[in-house]
Length: 187
Image 1: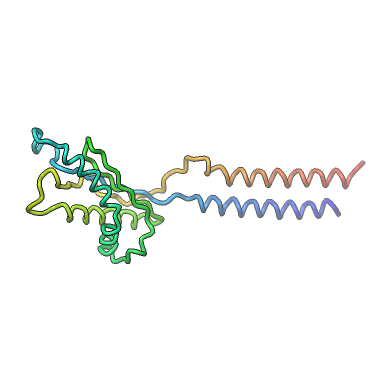
Image 2: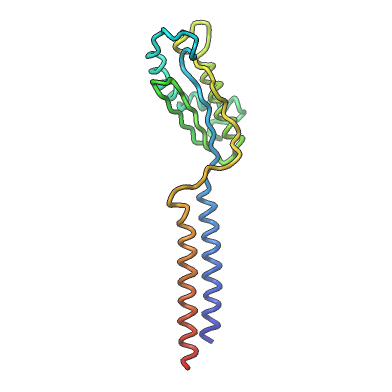
């Protein structure tokens, strides 16, 4: 009787551990990520003798501008979305020496990530272009954000937590089963 009850307990514990492990693995799934690369100021070969320091300082300003509510709202509108509908994570970084601005978008939908990144590029280029825009303030697109084809690999310790939990539950259930058999059959 004890063995039969222990076996049921083992089945329940293993089933619960499997469900928990699957749920944790799904919850730890990383969003799709894509990036667009821009350069602020003159592109290589246009005018190597000019002072590019203002362009480097503007790169930092433009990166902050990309993350601003007004630019995000305008990009959302260009995609036919309400600003509150944006669920993506947007990050813009700048390098004052190279004058590069990198716009990175992470989203659960690959096409939405690329669409938003490219809409942000369009908004920034629109804000920084015009007949009165000085060459050091102009923005040129080096690469548009492609639609990502795979989610980023999980490379941190959180990847192993579900497996450890499942293994621990199975080990505990096995100990229960072995202890139950030992009590049932003393001979």
